[in-house]
Length: 109
Image (tube, rainbow, N blue to C red; front, side, top):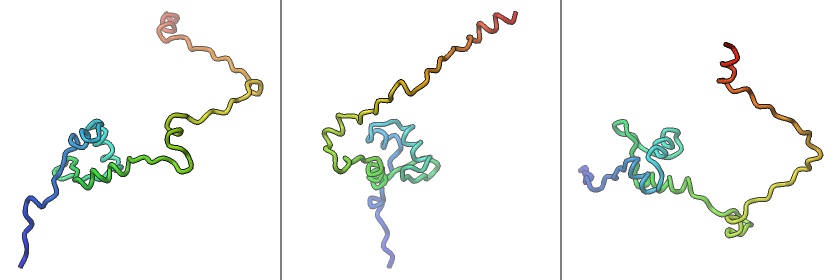
């Protein structure tokens, strides 16, 4: 005997707009990520649709964790310092701007 699945047991599909609203980003961004294959989706009828499992996977993909060995509070507030380059070792190059197109057109008449 075959058991039929109730319609309430089927996964609910959400639109790109629903996912974008939940993530706080644009619908275009969600569709672009799906188009490039960066996030999971299904595409019945030609439009991007997402299940709850897809949404949770998207959250995992873009999750960021603190790096090991560094204090999370200091790494978030302090950017790494740049090394200072000695200016005496570099040769100075002078740049010259091009003549604007409208000025060149006026010269040819």
